[in-house]
Length: 282
Length: 125
Image (cartoon, each protein chain N blue to C red):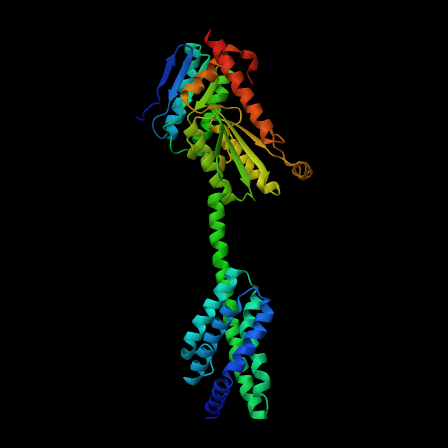
């Protein structure tokens, strides 16, 4: 019985002070967001949310996970998704909801009974705040996994540099999944273009550790077994120092500082082969 | 009785074209046949065409390396041609690098390489 009375009093207070509360809520939140969201949009979002909360309270219940709050929850999830996409931090997002506490505190805590009601309402808002953070994180994770997928597709082009020479400009870190994709593409391109020389350019690879070197070696060996010469180019001074410091052995795999040098070398070898062929035929 | 892989003689070159997936006994027979044929024909080069080979295991991978070594001892250069991308990737995953085996992209390039090698024996590794 006491709870219902409390809820009734809370609803009365919220309805009576609607304009004042929403205006103040708006001010607090927009101060937080420092003008990165238009006031009109924020006002609309918070207004809808306020109405939904009042309605849910009228329908009875102070539990944020209850049936009455379905509307509030879906509004909050929508709000969190937008915030996550626009690049706001999780605390900024959660504070949008929690700021309502600050707004209501002076109005409700005038007597002991009011303080009790305020505490109950604060608990409800905490629950809703948690919900926004949850939705925020979920959206972020969706974005991250979508990007990882795109990255894998985009980051492994195999280009034909010259007749008989293909190049693989590697950008980003090499892991076993990417090595597999690179290797597959490179070997297939060798067959398709009937190329004898392949150049793997690692200018865009930030670090080379033993693991990455192992992946590179595998790719080179596979290309060799197909009958192509494989060169690694684009080794920056820092990378060269790391490779030597780690004691990585590239064996008899030719390496070059720049792609240009590697291409020149490949073209020279192709010219030499052609010359030998001509001589052999005579 | 299992099938045998044919060893064809073209000039002073022996051509081994593997057209089916190999069983272990066929691999052993091939090694035997090939070494005999090199001695009989006094061949200078061997070309093993594996472009039709879709599945390899470590046994077949080792066979390629062994055949290359045997031929070299008998004075003939071996070139493995036409390896498929999937086969190359499998061999790498199996940890075989076929060191000391010469390879070429296809039969045509293999024959050209062989001609170059026999023309300039000083280059031989």
